[in-house]
Image (tube, rainbow, N blue to C red; front, side, top):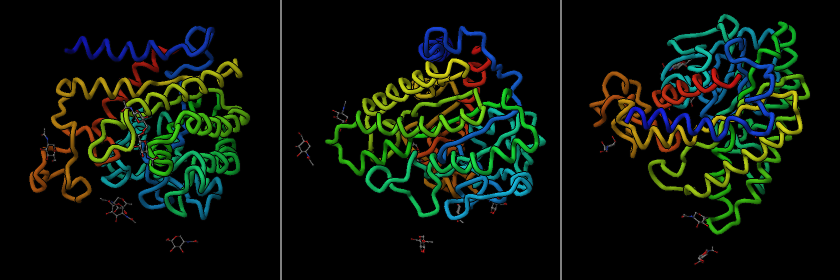
Length: 342
Ligand SMILES: *[C@@H]1O[C@H](CO)[C@@H](O)[C@H](O)[C@H]1NC(C)=O
Ligand SMILES: *[C@@H]1O[C@H](CO)[C@@H](O)[C@H](O)[C@H]1NC(C)=O
Ligand SMILES: *[C@@H]1O[C@H](CO)[C@@H](O)[C@H](O)[C@H]1NC(C)=O
Ligand SMILES: *[C@@H]1O[C@H](CO)[C@@H](O)[C@H](O)[C@H]1NC(C)=O
Ligand SMILES: *[C@@H]1O[C@H](CO)[C@@H](O)[C@H](O)[C@H]1NC(C)=O
Ligand SMILES: *[C@@H]1O[C@H](CO)[C@@H](O)[C@H](O)[C@H]1NC(C)=O
C-alpha cells in the first residue's frame, strides 16, 4: 500500500513535471526551491492566511473597499495562527510550505527563513463580473484585483526591502470558486469548456502582470477533487478534469511564451485523489463527511462532544475545505516534488 502511495505520487509528478519541450525540468533552471527566500501567494480560502491588518476570516491585508497599504503597514502586519487563522482549522499549505506561521500566535513574515507574502482572499473568483463570476461579498478581492493590488502596493513595498525576485516563488491557486459558481449560475446543461477557456484567459492576463514586474518563478496548483466533496455536488469528475486540462494548456502556453520563466505545475488533484483512495495510510478515518462541530472553539480538545473523532482524522474540514491535516499531507508531497524540479 505504501508503495502504491509513492507510485501514485511520482506518477502524478511525472505527468506534469515537464510542461514543454525544454521546459522547466530540463532547461538550466534558474530557480531552485532550496534557495527560495520568499513565497508570494494569490488565491482563495485554500490559500489565504489571517493577518492582523486583514479582513477578519478573509485576508492577510485589506479588502475590496481598501486595497491600498503603505510598506510600513505591510511590514507591521502579522500572520495570525489559531483555529480561525485559516479556512482549514489550522495551518494551510502555504504556511507548511514556507514553515512561516505554523505555530499558534503571531508571526512576522520577515523573520521567516522563507518569507510568506499572502494576497489571497477567501471566497475569491478569478474576476468580478456579474455575468460570469460575481463577487461573493462586496468586500471580496478577486484574483485580478489581488494582482492589481500587488502591482500598486505589494511589489513596491517588497522592492523597498530589496526582496530577491530571483529567489521568490509566485504561487497561484485559483478556480475552486469559479468552477462551482459557473456551474450554479449557468446550470448543469451549459457547455463548460468555453467558460473554462475564458476563465483561464483571465487568470493568465493577470499572471502576465506579475511576470512583467520581473518575477520569473511560478507555481500553479490545479483543482482538488471537488467532485468528492461531502454534500451536494456542484461539479463532477469530468468537469474538474476538463477545467484542469484547460488550465494546464494555458500554463504550458505561458511557459512557451516566456522561456526565461520557470513554470511549475503541481498536480494536487492526483495527489489528493490518491490520498482519498489510500486514506488509512495517512492516519485518516473519515473521507466522506466532515465534523459538524468543525468551527466550535473547543473542537480540537473535545471532538467527542460533537460526535466526532479528532479533526486530524478528517479529510474534509467542512463542505468546501480540506482539513489542516490534509494540507500538511499534500504539502509534504509538494516539498519533495519541488526539490526534484531543478
Ligand atoms: C470568523 O469565523 C469564526 C469561525 O467560523 C466565527 O466564529 C467568527 O464569528 C468569524 N468572525 C467574523 C468577524 O466574521
Ligand atoms: C484568532 O486570533 C484573532 C486575532 O488575534 C482573534 O480575533 C480570534 O478571536 C482568534 N480566534 C480564536 C479561535 O482564538
Ligand atoms: C456591502 O454589503 C453589505 C451587505 O449586503 C451592505 O450592508 C453594505 O452597505 C455594502 N457596502 C457598500 C459600501 O456597498
Ligand atoms: C458531468 O456534468 C456535465 C455537465 O452537467 C455533464 O455534461 C456530464 O455528462 C457529466 N459527466 C458525468 C460523468 O456525470
Ligand atoms: C438539461 O438537459 C436534460 C437532458 O437533456 C433535459 O432533460 C433538461 O430539461 C435540461 N435542462 C435545462 C434547464 O435545459
Ligand atoms: C464521518 O463523520 C461524520 C461526521 O462526524 C459521521 O456522521 C460519519 O459517521 C463518519 N463516517 C465514518 C465512516 O466514520
